[in-house]
Every structure is written in structure tokens, then in C-alpha cells.
Image (cartoon, rainbow, N blue to C red; front, side, top):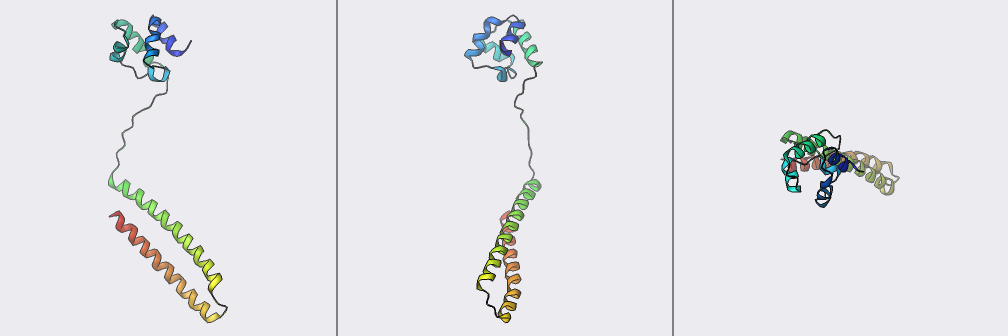
Length: 141
């Protein structure tokens, strides 16, 4: 015997079990039934409907709950900025790793050229980072 049958039997409405099953009402949908739903199922007796409603309202059955969520512009902006900053950080790390590999492959052993590259490398990386930041900030506006 399942919970649906137990509730109906405790109210003396066991002859309506088939009506519930025909309408695809199971243990999980039982909790959300209203008085008008019970009328539609075919339970005409008001006392019987009241008994069923009382029994199902006391059941500890998990049901979905509607939650109203209000998002303001500050929350959305902070969320987008956080995602943009994380993305920029990942791109900068990737760029740094790529430039490190580039340096190992293409920089000559000549110390003068290597020193020039060590000066240019941070300048190029900073410029690219600033460019990407301004692009993201303009997209957020």
C-alpha cells in the first residue's frame, strides 16, 4: 500500500484511488492538490475533500518551492565584472606562458638582444592587458 492509498483510506475515500491514478496523481503531486482539484477528480463530498486536504497538508513530502529572485543592476554588474576579471587573469597567464615559450625558442644567446627583449616583454604584456581591460569595461557599459 502506498502513501496515496493510505491517505485515501484514512479518510474513507479508498474507492477514489483509481480516479487519482487515472489523473496521474502520485505521492509527489498529492501535496499540491487543492479543493477544486479534488472536485475535478470526482470527489463531490465536501467533508471528504476537507479530510483529504487536512491529511495531505500534514504530510512531510518534498515539493518544489517557488522562490522569487530579484536581481539589481549592481549584482549583475559585479557578477559580470568578476567573470571578466577571471577571464582576463586566465588570458594573461596563458599569454605569459606563451611569451615565455617564445622567449626560450627565439631569443638569441646574444646578451644585448636578450636585455632588449626583457625590457620589451613586460611593456607588451602590460599594454595588451590594459587593452583587454578597456574592451571588457566598454562592453559592460
